[in-house]
Image 1: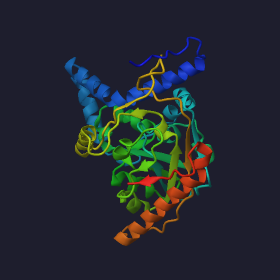
Image 2: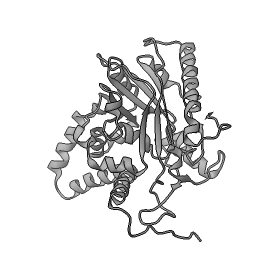
Image 3: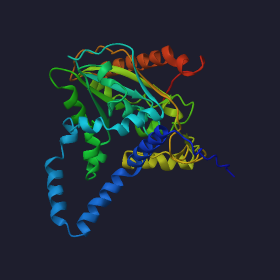
Length: 334
């Protein structure tokens, strides 16, 4: 039987705010889309058909917005709740070199982790210093297009700077004249989340080459987030096991797969779905200069992909000792 370790009663108020901020974020991540859909159904069932019809018309007219740069809100991105969210872990964004605001960039974010806390905290809020570190740059975090099908939830996502990860969406952001746009893609996706557990250095990257073709419209930047995999434990799911087989089927069918994870609770530290208070250090590497090519050959894609993986491995090796990674530990590309 698991012995429950309860949180003390005299916890400072600011830490309670931090816990509340992360709790609402976890809830939105896991159940926000479903709850918004239920709200829409309740509106219809309660006879407010005119409201539902107006929103349906709006949805039809606005359908392509997540693929056309979205509709961010600086007000939402500056909500105080996000400051408490970032301070909970805390989340740090670390620059290794400048980015030219007259160019566009594609950042490959690694690892996915369970809930991609580092990517959200750094690129969807204004409290880890992105604008100060990279003046003149606007970040766009790309995610699965299915989430923009849910009423109301899509508005919430776009308000924080989240857009679709479709080719059309990426091309739109990276083709904007004048530069200053940064597309952030979590390269490993759902497949990599199934490997997310403390100490894991497994990255789903060897067969992920689609982003490289898009990157030939902009410069490519590797990003590694130390601590991302340390926020949750995950049920053992080795390849070939029943659990992993079900998860893989779900991923191939729906495009995403939720890992069976656990960490701490709100009022106790022994079991729950709240992430551990582990610091996240997101290191933004040096850009790989790419010559624009909208019709690259397979060899050109393979060459740039190999160059990218080499730069990512180099970035990891340069910084791993600072964040508790042993000398004999290296990234594993699968």
